[in-house]
Every structure is written in structure tokens, then in C-alpha cells.
Amino acid sequence: MALLMLPAWRGPALGPLLRPLCSWADGLLHSMAQPGTWDRFYTQQDTAGTPSHFNWFFDYMAISGLLLPALRGCGPPEPNPNPTRVLEVGCGTSDLSLGLYRDSPHPVHISCVDVSPVAIKSLHRLLQEVPPPRHPLSQLHLHVADATDLEGGGFGDGSFHLVLDKGTCDSLLRCAQGPSQARRLVAECLRVLCPGGSLLQFSDEDPDARVPFLEQAGAPGVTVQEVGHLGGMCYYVYTLCRPALETPTTVALN
Image (cartoon, rainbow, N blue to C red; front, top):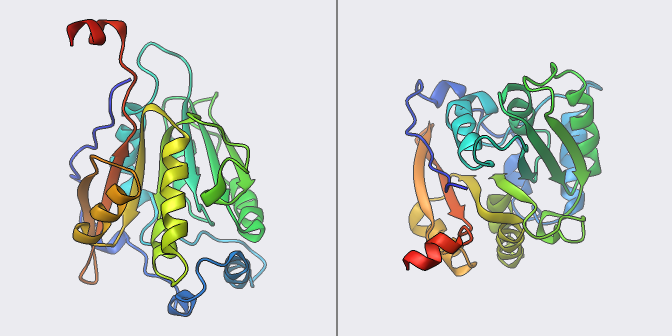
């Protein structure tokens, strides 16, 4: 399987597409590592009784032109009919995975995990409103699970071709007790990747800080690409690849 290569961003300016955080998000700063915080957060988002998507940083449409080619690039090689297996950690009520499920022309099996049952319940209701997937064999499943303990959630080694993290690592790093949990998150994401698979982290943290953290967390060879700007803030995607297994031919050539 080929290593994931992200295409250059050639879409419109992302500023108008990006969504700012909710007005009281700053109050989460000291409790983002606490599961109960997210139950309260998503309960407040659902006070009107009708669930709606809440997207940290930006929504699916802002990066769909980047994600869809990336999705195909990290899946099983042609003409393998098996689906590309995708995991989104800390999904909340984001429309990220629902958009991939709806739009992918190739079969995908997507698992969305979040520590908050309130978020997963809301996302399940939102899923009922999504049109049928473009590919009839695509599937999307929702799980209440701790992304820092994916093994406890039943996710084994090498289970996925692609892991998506949009703001989950950031939420852990921005509270006092979070850095050790953030390192466990990265380790778990890498563990569940199959050889040749990729972890994409979307973040507003500067590469001078994030790349050393990821490398210390056990992810050598981190690559970074600028995604876009909002209100003077630059967003990035960090790509971490699990090395592909050597084939007998490769070994012989070496």
C-alpha cells in the first residue's frame, strides 16, 4: 500500500468556511481532559432539542478537497475491492466522518469514537439525516470509547488504514493534566494503524511546538502542511505514517 500523499490545497480561501469556537469554549481550558466536561458541553449544544453539528476549527466542506484524495491514497491498492477502514478519534458531533461516508466514491468503513455518550447520541440522530452513501458498501459506526485507550474499546492492532484527529490532541494538550494523555492518544492512534497507514492531525498549533511533541510521542518522520487561516490563526495538518511492511522483493533488493 502506498504511503499517504496529501494533495496541495487549491480550493478557495478557507477563512469564510471556517467556524469559530462557541462563545464559552475558553471555559473548557482547565477541564478538557475530564469526560464529564464533554457531556455538559454537548448537552448545552442540544438545548433546543434538535441536534446540530459542532465543528472544532472548521467543517468537512472546508477540507473535503484535501481529504477525499487522501482517503483513496491510503486505502487498499487497486483492484482490491476491500473497503478503506477509517477511525475518527474524539468525533464529538463533527460532520467530518459523515461527509466522508456520504461522498466517498470508494467503499469506506468508518468508526467514530468519543468519550461522551451525549455526543454519540446526538451524532446518531444526525446520521439519520445523511443521504445514502455514494458507495453502497460503505458503512459508518459510532462508539462510546476513550481515544487514549482504544484497546479497551475493542480496537485491535493494525485495524485501520487512516486515523483522523481534528482537535482532540489539542484539547488534551491545553489543560494541565493533559500532555501525558495526549501522548497516550498518539500512541494508540499509531497502534491501530495497519502498516502503511496514516494518522492525520488537524491543529492550530505551530509546527515548532507540535512536531517535536509528536516525535517524542513516538512518531518519527512527521510531515506538516498548511491548511488555511481564520482570524489570523493558521491551521495545519500533521501526517504520521506507520511504515509499510517490507516485501520479499524489497528485502532482496536491499
